[in-house]
Length: 401
View 1 (tube, rainbow, N blue to C red):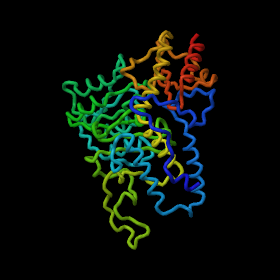
View 2 (cartoon, rainbow, N blue to C red):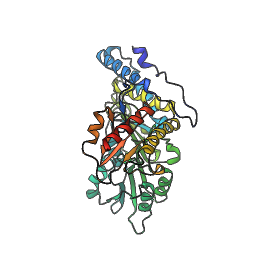
View 3 (tube, helix red, strand yellow):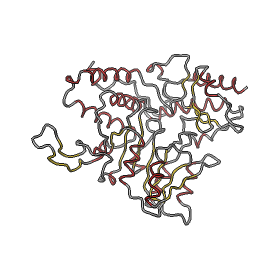
């Protein structure tokens, strides 16, 4: 068992460029009668990750068998896996527990001048928003909320807010590049340069993008980018990763840890031998990062996503959401234009309000989606196939009638 858990997971063959990834349902514990279209809430764990979790529990049960170098190997495997999903150097990635932890770290590192503004999105998830709202009054800055655009074009709405004549200077824009409730996608290739041109920082909550959509922090150059593992990268709860641009890596971390310092060693003759911070993003690692159970599970999910490749995953999920959208075109629901929505999230709007109990009635037919801010959010993943999409359409049409 120890040998299995320590080796890198044997992954399926990588799909080539522009290839639609086949359904990976066989890698999950998902009965055929279940149509689970709710990855944007929680993804199921692959069978390989479940087995790694069981092995991890057994490992913690017999800690005298844990080798001295094992924790460091776990950390670096996870760090490399996370970095690969966003085309980052592993040295620039910190191991953290949550997106909100990453945003709090960024807020500690950034100077938001009085009189400046922080840009956020209307109805964005709380994680990239609440930290700035909490600090605004004491810091003397304002949080400017970019309102939901009527046409669904979040990118253009952000660009207009950035360039608004006479507006206070922007200290930072902090937002999800895929809106969690409506699936609207933001073109970071346009927004990031516009912010840099004004000397503004950029924090990206990539919760609904990392692993599924192509991200290259080298070309985008955000100041911070953060994502968890429990949704789209098929991992456990409580594991997340923070990219910190090198220009931001000299600050004080959120927690003070021994491993964040150059030489604080229990095995040395002098304990606090050198309390200078280590270089790179490791100083921002969370305390108690030795998660013998969940860290390897996180690595496996991220490695699977990297092996398949974002392009192949995107092609598969776009095929499924488009299939559903086409079948619902005459059902009286509102759908964002395909060019404005993420390929893997389809959000249905209801002009006269969502039918009462819709989510529960779908679930009674083993079809699972989520209600988010008056919309029905459909979010397939690699374990879904055309049969799942068609079962949703049939169930939805039946209930709509």
